[in-house]
Image (cartoon, rainbow, N blue to C red):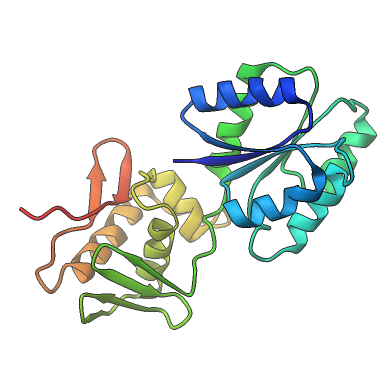
Length: 230
């Protein structure tokens, strides 16, 4: 489930945001105090942060700066909420690292659309040095993959694909998302290329006769999914 940390000191707005976010299927974690905001983000490791500009003790601008300076959380998208509508303020918020900016009062449907757009563009979370899924273990530092006790040999593109899948287990990545995450925006690659490399990754992971843990979702994409024994 997508987790969103909501850093907002106005109780009424917190309640409104919690209701609408959870209605969309998001898990929310409220923070009312600027002093507690950074610790909450580090501890919760959310997929997105809603951040109020005006907060007690520590401003949203300072919190955003601190987030962008912290290696473990700087990848997380930040959407700033503020009553400050001047263009200069908007430029200031974006220049210090905010990904988007909405002026209060705002439309809830527009906020939800902005959140979805940010989540689609967000890079995968940086993986831990070693991460496990089902019977698979991946050492991202050494770039080694094991299924049970078998070493899996992957090419660099297949390893990068696996890294993207491991960033959000069970999440269905579209071909467009995989193209952007693995190949980037600077070169032209056809959707069919994704299918070819997913097939290679699947063959390598299953070479020892293991149950397939890459799920194909028709017309949608691919997901790393918990293997089910036949």
